[in-house]
Image 1 (cartoon, helix red, strand yellow):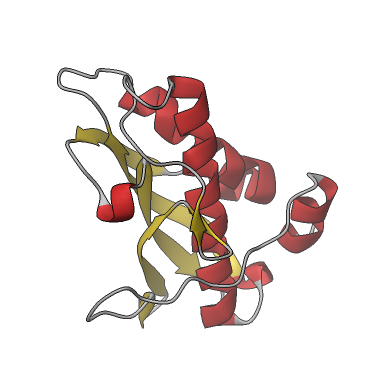
Image 2 (cartoon, one colour):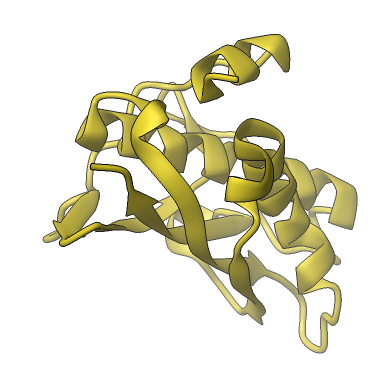
Length: 153
């Protein structure tokens, strides 16, 4: 199934691709790999989730935050490639969770992004991953996701 049709089937729409918030570009392609800059949970110019997991956010709300990050990443991928059909596979995901000290459930939070990639791309959405807790993220975001994608020629 077409990834964009799958998004629609899931009741999800891609946001406007988020603009870079500094001296970088949203994606860089080298060979058949597309490196995607980190995206936070920004939708229509507004943060959807801010604050730390274990304080202002729960694991479940943070998981939704990671899904928003993944949708922003998909929007950047589509802007770079013209279509999500050009994604051969999601290769690697780095997930960052704004959390209280000693927070140990970062993998559960970043599953929000990972699960979305598998729902959209099937087996091609399965990826290697890192999920770490940090003590702050841009704009107070609850999560941030970086992705490496293999591109079909």
